[in-house]
Image 1 (cartoon, each protein chain N blue to C red):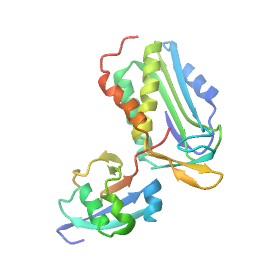
Image 2 (image 1 turned 60 degrees about the vertical axis):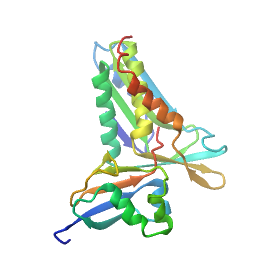
Image 3 (image 1 turned 90 degrees about the vertical axis):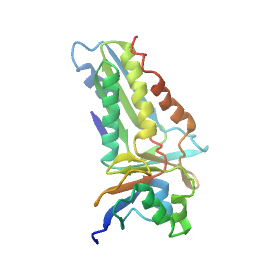
Length: 88
Length: 156
């Protein structure tokens, strides 16, 4: 990590975890980034990753609390991205 | 009390635990959800339930706190199962003990409605051929949203 970057872990669940074939990854972002920028950065990988910004409804949690794309991120935060929940 | 578990639960034992919440308890409402043979598609043979460990418990504890702030409830118990479930298996239990029925009925439904739209669980329906992730229903969101408009319904 450089001084101007933060490192966050990103977790995926359910349909998204299967489509991306990824449980969890770690990424660096510029200091001052928000949760939406995690999705934008990953969507640039193309393919299945494009759905992170493709208008499909998704929920975001930061450190296990529901969040929004505008939620600011700090170093070592955990960002979770998942489809709308369907328990009960 | 919140429990996320693969094991089945004994609804009668949960009811008894609510009865044991003290002599001030006058009304218990319980809800039990079961695996049904048709959901998003017909011919469902079972379910697989995934969750987000840690966040799930925290969200449900928060929902119970909201219910406690809103209604005069003495105890709430929530159990949700995860993993592979068969047809007619119990999935979820919500039980509320209060002095009066109005608080128990409303708090039980509120907890269940909020759980369905905010607790991080995901159902996959298993068919005889294939499987698919269940989509969240607009009706479930509307059911949960109705509680936002009802801040003056504390009377029973």
